Image 1 (cartoon, rainbow, N blue to C red):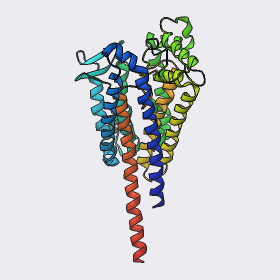
Image 2: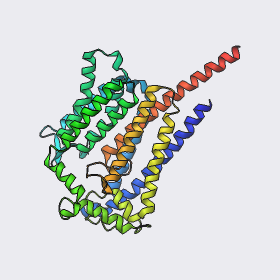
Image 3: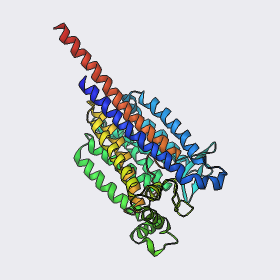
Image 4: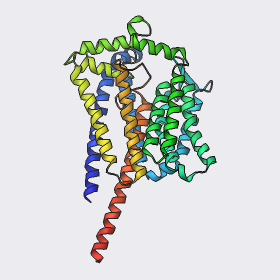
Length: 381
C-alpha cells in the first residue's frame, strides 16, 4: 500500500501545480483582455467569462474521462481518433469551416468556435499507442488500416493549414513510437522519412518560408511580418526584472496581436517581469517533473506510455509557445497550455488530463487489489 500512497501524494502535487497554472492563466487573461473586451463588447469580462465557462466544461469532461477505464481508451482509441479526424475534415468543407487569416481551422457552433485540431493532439496518442503496441499482433492489412488513422489527421492539418498542430502531432507520435515496443528498425526509418517530409512541407508554401525569414530578421519588415514578434520583444523589455505591475501592460493596448491568446506570455513578461516569467517556467517544469514521476510509479506498460505522452504533449506545446514568443522559434499558431485564452485548447487539455488520471486511477486500483490478495494469502498461511 506504500506505492498507492506515493501515487496519491504525487497526484496531489501534480494537480496542485496545474491548478496554480490555471489560476495564473485566468488572472492574465483578464488582465490582457479587459480593454479589448470593453472596446468590442462594452464590458470588461467577455473573455474571462467565457474562459470560466470553458474551465467548468473542461473539469466536467476530465472527471468523466478519468472515471472511465483506461483500457477502454486504449482499445477504442483509434476509433475515437477517426471521429476526431472526421470533425477536422469538416473544417475544410466550404460553408462549414470558418476561415480566419487564410486558415480553415475552426467550426462555428452556436456562437462558439471549435478548433478540432486541438483534440487530435490527444486522440492521435490513443491511436498511435494501440498501433505501435499491437504491431506484432497485426497482419499487414490491419497495420495499413491503423497506420491510415495516423496519417489522415496530420494530412488534414496540413490542408487547413495548421503547421503548428501538425508539428505537435508528428512529435508526439514519434514519442509514443519510441516509448513503445515498435521495432527500432522501422521506427528510425519512419522517423527519417517523416522528418524529410516535414521539411519539404515546411518549405512548400511561400508564407512558411516568409515566417522563417522573419524569424531570422524580424526588423527587415517591422511594420509587416515582423510586427508581432517585435512587439513581443518590447513587452519583455518593458517588463525588465520586476515588471510594470499587473494590469499595466502597454503592449496589450492594441499593439500586440493575440495578447490574450498565443502571445499571453509576452504580457506576463511585461506586467510581472523576469520574476513572473521565471515563475511560469518553473511551474511548467514542475508539471513535467511530477507528471513523469507519477507515470513511473505505474505498473502497467500501456498506462505508463499513455500518461507520459499526455505530459509530453503539454510540455512540448508550452516549450514551443515560449520559444515562439521569445523569438527563439519561428511564429506558429500555438497557445500556452492552461494559460492562453481559448475554449478548444483548454477543454482538450482537460481531456488529456482526464486520460492521465484514468491511467493513474486504473493502476492504483490494480495495486490495491494486488495488495489485498497478498494480505489474504499471508493471513491464510
